[in-house]
Structures are given as C-alpha cells and as structure tokens.
Length: 97
Image (cartoon, rainbow, N blue to C red; front, side, top):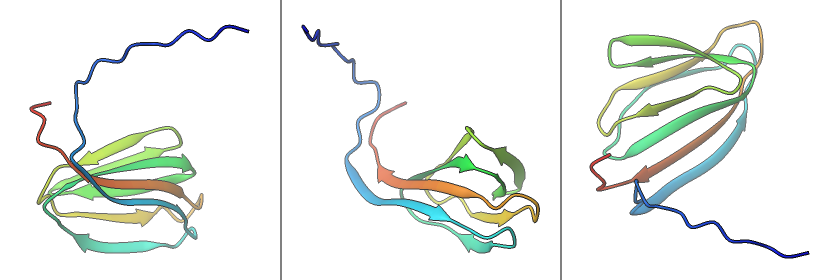
C-alpha cells in the first residue's frame, strides 16, 4: 500500500501548550470564574455544558467547541441533565488569526 502525504498550510501557529486535559464531569459540576493570559478551547465530547464567556452564555453540546481569548473571564456549569466529558486545551499563539 502506498501512502501519499498531504501538505499542510500553517494558518495558526501554536507557540506553547500549557494544558491538555480530558475531563469526565458529573451532571452537577460547576467551575467558577477563571481568566488567564493565553488561549483555551473547550470541546464537548459527550453531554452538554453551559459556558459563560465575559457577559455571554452558550450551551455547548456534543461535537461543539468554544475558544476563550486571552484574559477573557469564563466559567463552566453542567446543565444537570447530561454529564459532560470535555477536552480542554490551553495554548499561546502570536498568529494574527
């Protein structure tokens, strides 16, 4: 079997990784406000989660992702119905994108 490589273009450059986590939370999980000087994304692998970012609130379901920009206040709370499993990765990037 022959393998053919795919060339990738770099639209976002990750300078540093800070955390890579997979969390399995209970349906009553609450995480209070947090803020830091790097990017973070939350990806819902299972269930659903209520995310607050600054003054906006979002309901994320399985397969959805949300990025927190540097210094953005944010919090997480399970909805009480479906326990969420989340992938949370934080990183720094000097890319314009």
